[in-house]
Image 1 (cartoon, chains in turn orange, brown):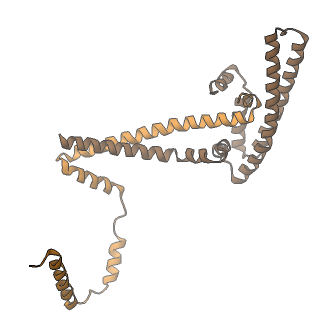
Image 2 (image 1 turned 90 degrees about the vertical axis):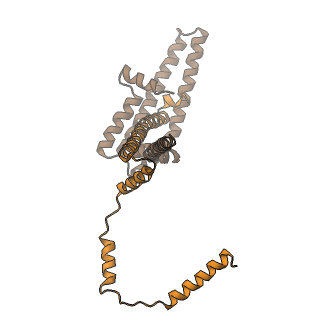
Image 3 (image 1 turned 90 degrees about the horizontal axis):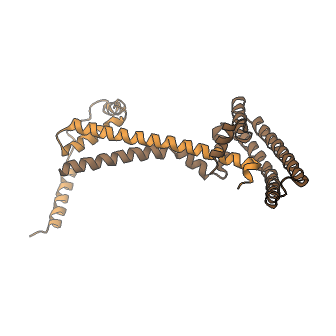
Length: 115
Length: 158
């Protein structure tokens, strides 16, 4: 009785010898290489929507209501982006005024004297 | 029920990632400025669109002005101390008071003259539009033209 490991090695050996014996019965079509490169060059450019679509398809495995799921994720994403933009806006305003004040404080002897 | 929970959590995750991404990208410039050797000057460079050469010249002007500013600051502090001690001692209406006050006014005029001279030197290193904007801004902050501007300066004081 062979153990599974030995069995797999035997299969590998058989496959290797079969592959060695195998010969191509027909030649490659004319312009094979060119058509491969044509195929590659005419492929559609990368589209980020594909990621979203694939994500929704994956998530839809959990539910049948694909459009509701897509809508939910789109809304959540928009809310995240919106809140992020609002936070960035308020941060940059406060950064701007604190830097402006720091500069003035450095160069104005009267504000400088308060340090 | 379990599916709904997983979907809700995934949605929240997506929202948090979107929020963090926007925040991280939007504040990248501020983080770079804060990490620089002199954030105030780095801010000035960004705010007034200074070229590298102009920034170098303005930095030199800035660092050569700072010791003068420290000197004036010490004079102002000393005069303020004298004025306070005169008021506390009750000698706030004599000749001594007038003398100290006139010295304080003299110091203020000298400080303002040196400061304005520095601002004009800095502005001359800028192009026309940023020069005008810089002078307008810095003069409004340091020489408040009105009660409102003075209040604004005081409100920004931490």
